[in-house]
Amino acid sequence: VTLALASSTTPSFVSNSKNLNIVMFVPTDNPALSDYKTRLTTLLVHFQGWFHTEMLRYGYDKYMGLPKVDSTGLVRFIEIPAQSTQSAYPYSSAVSATKILNEIAAYKATHASEFSNSSHTLILLPNRTDGGDQPFYGYGKNCFAVDNANMAVDKIPNATSNLLGGMLHELGHGLNLPHDHAKYASEEPTLGTSLMGSGNVTFSKGQPTFLTGVDAAILNRNEIFQNPLPTEIPYEAATTTIDAQFAYNAGTQAFNVTGSFTSNKEVSDILVYMDPDLGSSDADYNAVTWRFNPGSGNTISATIPFNELYYKNNEPYNIRLKLLLKNGNNVSKNYSFSFLNGVPQVGANGSAKFHQNASYGGYGVSLPVGQYTTADLVSRGITNNDVSSVNVGLGVKVIMYDGDNFTGSSIELTSSSSYVSTFNDKASSIKVIAL
Image (cartoon, rainbow, N blue to C red; front, side, top):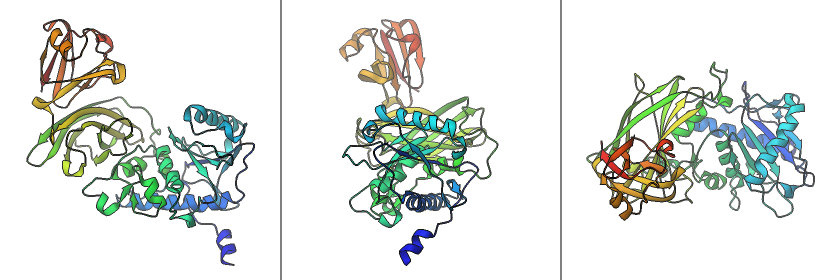
């Protein structure tokens, strides 16, 4: 009796003016499970409540909008028959993502009323029955996940599968959240694991999992969390500038961040990602994040204490400073530096890294503050007339000259450039100058 009652009792949930689109994408040879609408309604309502509880910790009383079928009280699922068999939709995003999105778009063209007027879609595929893999990742404002009989609230915790937390993690990506990590000192010991770090594992296992303040701020401006709708056009592009300085305070062991910005759209929050570059495999999972209020007069004032970082011995860092707009869009500017024996190399101890190819490709050679003739560059591994991109470290600027001995025409860089278009393959001498 209890089971029958439980299955027929539909949970209450919040719908907004714009809601998450939820697609069940069904290959021709792999039907959806018969109970998915009731089972996944309960799971998605659980996700909605989890997001709300986490956001409330930061003072945001917002709900992720879920679409509702009034006649059943269930979440609305858009069941779309796929054009091909399950083997045609493997995990590879290069093979499957655009193919599936194109099929969804074709279906939407004749079934527009089934969709919410939002740009966020959770796309579920029935678990493959042929042993193959399938899409499970964020893809822009879309995300892909798997449905099987264990995708249910009463299957949390699950000691053997990370798919439940995986669905919530990928949904985070589809809702504009990049990877990030708990602050190592003030968050991880008490709050556990960031959802957008390894939260897929901990959430599935029923272990402490949380939203960082940066993630909550981003969701607070997400279009499907707004009720009523604001006047801003969601995610409209802005014309912006960002000018930030990072000063190392040895006494407090922190960066003091100062600067200013301009924007023709209202800026809601300043976000900082401190991301150690441990190689291609770390995928930003260890980026520690901070949120700050914009100062009066479009100023930036923030403190980044190093006790919140784990990697601070001899690692290079990428810093992403973002303006989070009130309309939900964000604009980013990148900075870089390295720790050397526990001391951040900025200003007089700073450096710049010169790359052979655009987008920091090919060889890369770091030069500390100093002056370098053609012979100096060659001796350090930089070929004459071969630099295409420059990673400018904190507290330095770069002047590149097209002649030897700092002669000829020149270009000055105060921030990193992924392609020095007007000066590509022209550098014959270089100055790295402390600001």
